[in-house]
Structure formats: C-alpha cells, structure tokens
Amino acid sequence: MTEFTAEERYQARLIFEGKAGDAQKPCVHCGGVHLRSCRRVMEIQWHPDGSVIGAKYWHDGEWDDGNTVWPEDAYDEDDQPKEPVR
Ligand SMILES: [Zn+2]
Image (cartoon, rainbow, N blue to C red):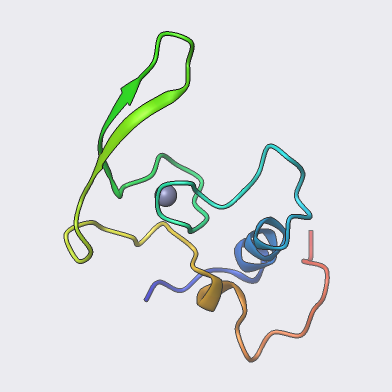
C-alpha cells in the first residue's frame, strides 16, 4: 500500500463523498482516485462523440495501483477530519 499525504487523502475523501464537484468523481474504471490516467485500463474504445464504448482492463494484481487512492487509504484511522495545511 502506498503512503499518501494528508492533503492527498483529504482530497480523495472529498471526491469519495461527492463534495469535490461534478468534475471530480472516483474513477469509473477502477473505483479509486488518482491524478493521472487510470492504470487499470489496458485499452479504451472511444465513440466519435467522445463517449467510451468499451474498455479492456488488466486483471487484479497485473496493474500498478501505486498512484491510486482507495477508500481505505483515504480514511486513515489516525486522521482527524481537518483542513489540510496550505
Ligand atoms: Zn482508475
């Protein structure tokens, strides 16, 4: 499991709870939160209108989820709910 900063976990919690706005939601492909493209996706088929019409995924254990925050990562027992220091 990757260690994430309090800031990253805070942002991920907002996204998991739907408080980060419509543009930011958990990844539709893997269910986690990550800044870059989803590493679970092997291949995506796009419709010309921009929607996704199909995707091939790596199997569990075959992809590197080191940049992905999972709910269990976002909700660290040691974390008190607080604003991140900026
Ligand atoms: Zn993803």
